[in-house]
Image 1: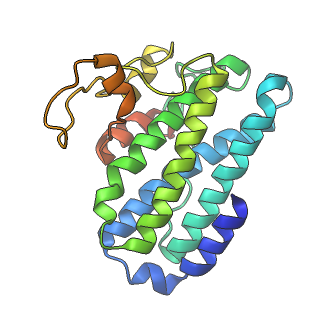
Image 2 (image 1 turned 45 degrees about the vertical axis):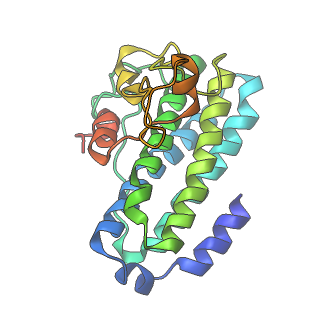
Length: 230
């Protein structure tokens, strides 16, 4: 995975490349970079915290850490000098107070895994929500879709480690606290435009189709995890 990211970076990354992109595309890439910074620092901190992660979860979380760090390096490489600075994060979800609803995130392995699930499920829907806006910029779209599919694998892995299904059913958050519910808003949708009608099996329909999140929805979800919000 990291080798692929390095090759992709070599193919795309330069200030000249970023300067040739429309401002909307640069904004989308910086939006993605913010999310990848969030995830990368979360896993770097978690994996580096002695005794936090249960032994049976440690190897998968360490591998996810490597992927997220590679995603950050890739996006920063593509954006060059247009890349935004990494925000200051509050992984308790307290908007910088350090005392949010996930206050024990780096003291309790189960809380850490729960926040990981929320981040990964959000990331999958966030990338999906921006894909259409990258049409016509095929190099960027292909790279974004490659990251999107890896984020989906992360989400499935984390959900299974928490004893959940690897996919989302209805708007079921998998036992996450109220503070994480916005991540799953709209997942109970049973009407797919291309099909033109709702499937009679509601549960199967919601599992078979992931829903998108808009940029504003995603930023509202992650705002409590950024000092001062954003």
